[in-house]
Amino acid sequence: MATITFDTLKFVEKLKAAGVPDLQVKAESEALQEALGTAEMATKHDIERVKSQLREMKAEINAKLTLVQWMLALTVVAEVVPLLVM
Image (cartoon, rainbow, N blue to C red; front, side, top):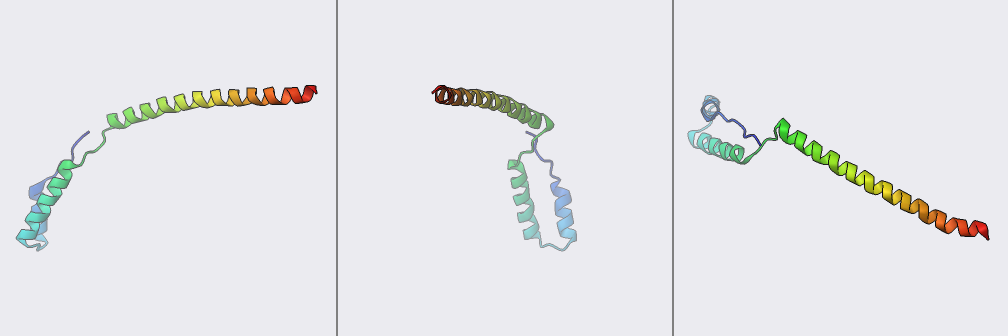
């Protein structure tokens, strides 16, 4: 996963230019830097890997569903044929 780039100096300068008090500027910049430091962004590679895993899971589920459909069809035939023969 990729990390987010954060320009602390630019952030602080913008807050100070807007008239935000120094203590608040310091607290906000530290909080934002900490939050962004723990945040992770998915890269295109990460997303492709997840898509691939989902495709594999979908194929497995489809295979199991097909098996269940055949089992149900055979069960119905096994129950209906004796009734028709009577």
